[in-house]
Image (cartoon, rainbow, N blue to C red; front, side):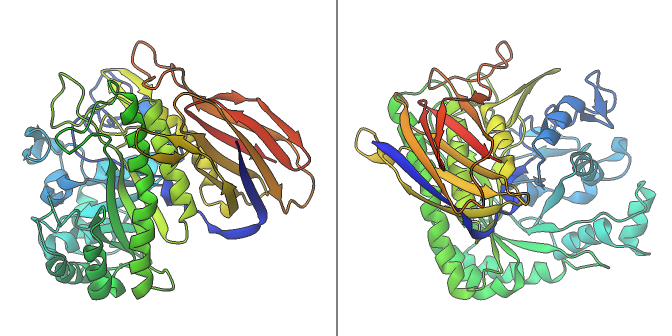
Length: 495
């Protein structure tokens, strides 16, 4: 069959928040140290300790928001250990991730510098699990108070006279698990208490994010919205795509069978159901959709690469991961009425990373290229997209062969992103554009695809999987017809 998309250019569905294209950098494995931070004395070219090649690559993605310092690490992180002269900073054990020594050389000042260099907004996650109300309150004061105060004076002593602008602040992380093993009722009360002291100083206004549910824990969302909804601006949701049978057998990033290709997409598509059901609960307490759903941890999670530290969560990244990313980003775009931010886990060398490094070498992953293709949706207007889509067959199930989303930029450019999840065959699609003010102008296509299901980039073959121009389409009137190759991600741009 020919799959059919009908794009109603003149039917607008609200803005796609650019923060949907956010990222997450935790003190985990080689994400911060070696990945982002090499130190000023490193032979690897750097800007005040931040490696230049990674900086340049990430800046190209136009990252809107970056979450730090965790993750589970956040609820053991004490920010005062990471400021002041580096030689005097407290060394700590990273108990969650490999038991390695954390020297705290990358702390508040270094993170805020990274955000300034990337021109991205910081999203800082505070410590509820092992921290105190005073500690969290003083961190916000240190960051944002403009005037004389103990924390502002200390900031100046450490080389920063002016306060930073800080919009996004998370009050705890995974408090149902590594952040304290709390019940929803207990965390709701703690959230109410802690957030009281996350103050707005001067004209700095903080968007407060409560620690939300793990996957399908709808009770957690119900309790948090009922008991604390009026005190929050956002509520998080965490969900990972695990193709294997369990957390102990997650599957390999590269050595997998065809059924794991299919199961990865089935698990990824489950994100749509999760957002729909959590949103319905949120609608009950917040019908105006004031509180954003913040999907601040998502992505593929496999068994670590053989021979690497199991606590470092280092995994390769293939065309399968690229398709998982495109599925998620299409889902987030299509739920832009409630989803206000999402942060893929994680930026460098951990889980579904954008970038992998090895010493002075750096490669871009297939997932990086998807984010590069999809950045056109940031802050664009979502437009109506209806579809009639065929199925791809698994052993015991069926999935839609295509997922898609569409947006219109402020200058009228239309961008349509879609994919072909079929491992073995191409699939036909016709895209009819309705409501155009004038006939279709220039149409360009970009494609990311591969010839094998585990195709990936490594340090010997850094460009095995990369985007190319796509020209295998025809235009008749206001309809684009194309044959989408197997396992592909596409972007059509109509000017």
